[in-house]
Image 1 (cartoon, rainbow, N blue to C red):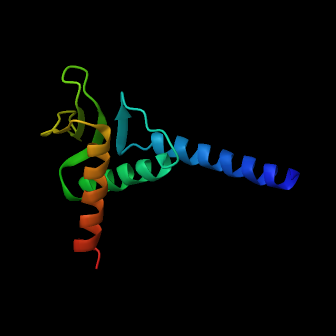
Image 2 (image 1 turned 90 degrees about the vertical axis):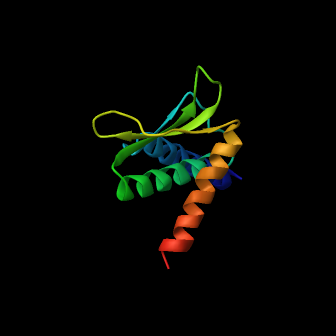
Image 3 (image 1 turned 120 degrees about the horizontal axis):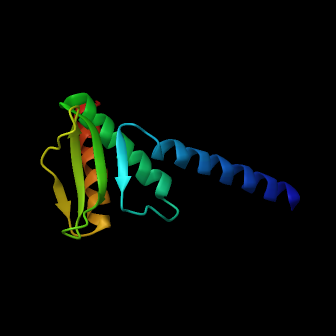
Length: 114
């Protein structure tokens, strides 16, 4: 029983470190939005993959994911090197935003990484 607890605690610590590393990624940021649940590492990895695609294929160097204070909507906002933002993509719910990012990454991988 103690071995299981040790393994479980080790895995929990590894996941906390992975989450911390993903949140400190210079390519994307999550603003005013909580990512919780069992799939939070999966979601953060998809955000990272999306940000890498945008940074490698456009003039934007960073992507911000978050909830807008004024509109109450969720958005994906690309950021240029000089700090200006491109056209934001707005969503009514956090699930819509996550679905868009997952679909975009899946479509990109399917079409361009043959």
